[in-house]
Length: 530
Image 1: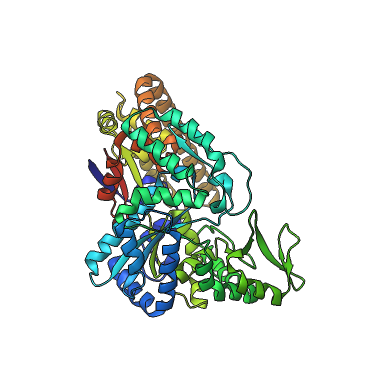
Image 2: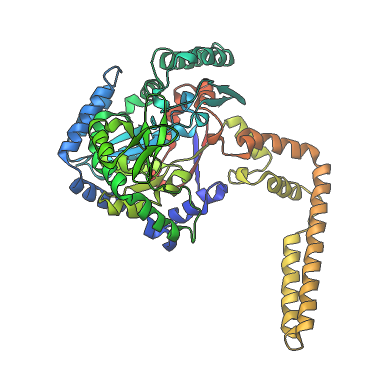
């Protein structure tokens, strides 16, 4: 196993928002508090310790014990659940949708990032306890986003009627999916493990939340991972004051809207708040709560509440109130003694919209940590890259740019068009100085000629590259094939592939390799050669 780290910006797959955050640019500093470094965690521990009550810790620990009652939790996970009752215990949290069989590869990277960060913080702050948490998005209702995974270029899909919180979905119809997946796997030892993992999860557990907990516990329980289901009566009870605040005062809408006005001057906005950022959750539906004409209505239903009635409903049935993407982060931070949220670039971009909201409701805003990203390369693929003289950073170039670069490097004719264009620009710069001493019409003529000549050189460069690509057809095909293997659909493989492809080949050593390779606070992209 060889591990290489490169800056995130070198891949070309990360947004300006995330790159500026990683660089701690001044423009983005107003939108977070403590940065994801050792010093930032020192301040975060102090703030969270002061704000988080022992009563909430007790409720959390007991709720988790109840959630695990039908599962074989490891001793380390049981210990971590008990430790949550102590005031010197803190969580590091990541979250993910309930994708079928974990969905994209980065599900694993998020959780390993959380586990490794806990271990690193334990070394830095030995008087504190750190617990890795996976927050299951059990209340999501976008089934189309989670009902499949890709295996060996094929889509393995679960088809059933949509409706309601996905965590409550029955797993009864997954027998057919299991048969399809099994046929792809073969009969090796690793294939047998994957078949067992899938069947035990989905054919022996009643709903999607239980099945997902089983898989995550099987893969990561030995590291003490604690899995949280927010669709829980006791935990919602703790959150009730904030739901009441949302219903009565629309604080999230007011504060986040102001933040967006400031943030959008430099950055792309990820999500927009609604006047009320809550859903009403029934057995087979999850619909927005809207306030119209002095009445609270549940969208697409006949359910309505007066203000008094909806507060009474909240008091007796808090589980029916489900936070949306704006309010869910607050729910997490209210019920967990959390220091840090680990997520992808899109997730962290919407967290950056929330700091002012957190300040308004007096809940500490967590540290945001961009999750580890990984490109897996086999030793055979690495040999091919070396033979083709492609560096690890060059893997991530746009394919057309990569091919152009390599055919020029391998061309018999060596013409550096970039130097020639720079030379032209310097010459015309001198001419413009002369032109300024004459009249405006001459300046215009010089500028027009500059554009024309540079354009001519660029066209010659394109024609030469096209000719070289034809002449070096074999090289072009080899590079294209290799890059397509590494970056399916010209995207990071972690967004396309499922962990089962690598588990089938490497077995449990794949997760062990990730555990060794990922360095959360290094804030760099990981290339893992296996």
